[in-house]
Length: 399
Image 1 (cartoon, rainbow, N blue to C red):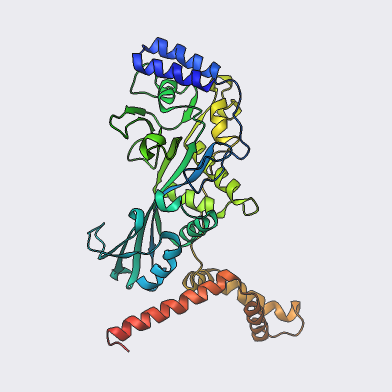
Image 2: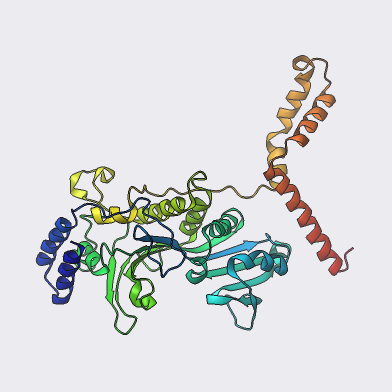
């Protein structure tokens, strides 16, 4: 049946049919796809070796990661030691990149830029670019460990690519073009396509690595989707249709945070699959929109079910900034004085014969025994900050 869909789409693209005929082809495509979802349970089996086909025909990974830390690491050597298990060895490079004072390079195109931010008291800024060739080779536990560090402590995440490899090729880029192109080639036909994007593009490239690619979303937007024949690009190593969702800015940070913090009790591959599918559905979904005015009640198209199953739209997850002693003091100065004064003055009546001073000392003792990991991390960060400041003053002859 899928061969029939592909053949019908191929004929439509090759002959350049009119919009009326294209509409008829869309109906044919919809009817042909109505056979129900293909096999698959999680919809997201992880493929660490790209030459192997996953059991249910869908492979998921992170295709690119760009992020920046400021003041998280004391010096370059500390970062290089931490990063080595994730991105391998990084060596100094003479190339100029993004205006950074020092640039390091690694295998498969990994790049690291560093500089000292005088405006932030000499804090070390580090920007890291990690391409798919590195991320797809990481064990899943290691990948999630990297993303958790980025989610919690990176100042910025400038790019994160979410990739789904459809090894069963349930729909081709050319079929997507027919499904979403309206009478006006510059507008998006949304009878079955649910998205805020207003326009898609379809390109057919020539040459040994050329192939069909369907684009959705603006090149300058926070999200853009590319659907293309990965087999042509990889020389047959990945015989799949790749769905590559490129996220930037706040969307990229939201995606990293949601993966790092979601579903602690779920198996890692299921977490990864649910995350990738939900990120895709947040940007685009394919449903029978004529069924109901509420799109969430419309049936998802069977071929898209094979990719995302019952994925729900991703929600933005806001992670609080790391707890610091400075933030605690700011909060305490504003919120605690009046409350502490009231508690201390009433302690004699509520807690027996306690004086205000005894009550405050007792609260301090209780607090010392109840410090959480976040509080201990704040104290350690303060110690590191004091040590860095003392070291800088020593180098400048200030101490």
